[in-house]
Length: 199
Picture 1: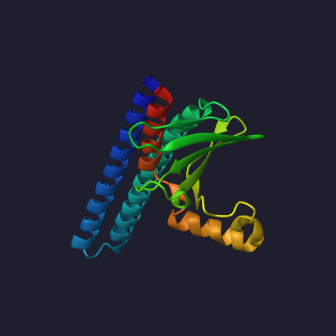
Picture 2: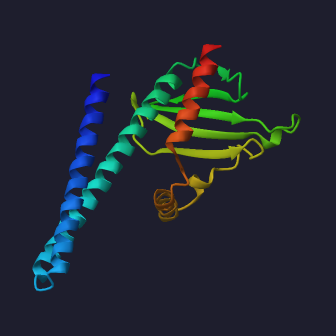
Picture 3: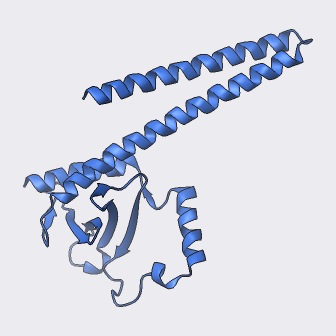
């Protein structure tokens, strides 16, 4: 608890310092613009403002990564509590959770059944690699979705594509974020898994 308070105070202090730099740079820029004879002052003001903005964005990025790491660690801890070869069900959402352990890897999978019972082919299976070699995965948390209707004997697309195609797909996922679970999704999974393990 003390670490999180210190971290929050440090983050707020850095945000305030970056804001002061932005204000200072803006004031110098305005002063350089008003006194049109001082082009150097205008350029210095713009440079100081840009440094303040980049500092502020870096603080925001580091905060987002730290929050994501905490959320992934909580999900990883809960996934480790799932017994081997067992499934747990969230009593509220009726989602089914399980852990798939391979040497050095820990995957969480979630089964989402369709709203209308009876059609098992529309069951969506979402896999999350939550940990590797006894440690939680670092952000972003990558997910892979498939339906139960997919034939398990056919090779997965990642195994049949070339390295360049796989690298391009991962680069696309990094650029767009479509393969990554956002912080709200991770927290929602953590809440559902907590309820499922409590039953």
